[in-house]
Length: 168
Image (cartoon, rainbow, N blue to C red; front, side, top):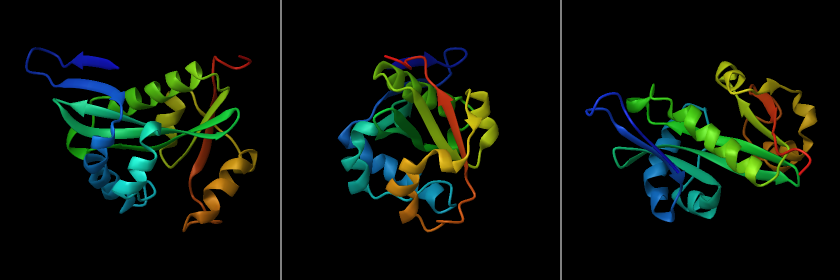
């Protein structure tokens, strides 16, 4: 968990923490907002609850304002996905903090590679990810992508980052 105070005493209090089951109802409308724009896949409250252990949440002044999930794909590969931050409070660095929390967790678990599928390439490049061919992620393609309405004409860029835990 991390907590930061904004500049001055009037700034927002931000906390990045693991999600709790009770967060699912607050996360669902934020995720659905971005899913309607085809930025992430849609999720129901029930599907969020089923994957709640994957999620990190950003709280701003005690209100859930965003999330990111870290999902195990195979024995040495994890995916950062469902990264969303309420548009009303973007610009606080919450997306970066959420991805950093997922990366730290992946490293602590001993994974060697984290990847993301994204249309926001610059953001992930600034986080140390580099583009990779989608063909280098067959596990992802056959686990999830084949069920996506955009398959096989995906316009997302696959990006990967090696982790410091490689070889553990």
